[in-house]
Length: 94
Image (cartoon, rainbow, N blue to C red):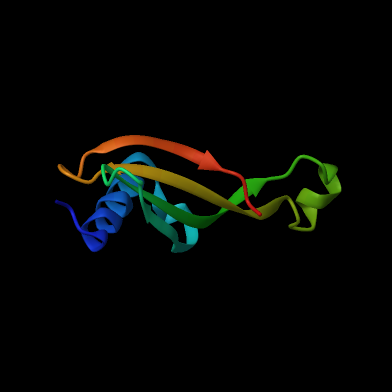
């Protein structure tokens, strides 16, 4: 069985495989829980990513306010037996 540290490491690896994480800031483990049937680890990873803003108009671009940072969360469902990724989904911030 995959333990909690291995599940978190796998989720972090999957995040790095699927995204260009060099553009992320503050990548942190947010939550981990084992499903009631002990089959899956649900690992939530949060990060801050630069989002281009179109709401500021052309003047915002000129004065350097064309981007904002947004906190995002991804929930990775890791098979507790094999360590394989079963699913990944976005979670809304609180």
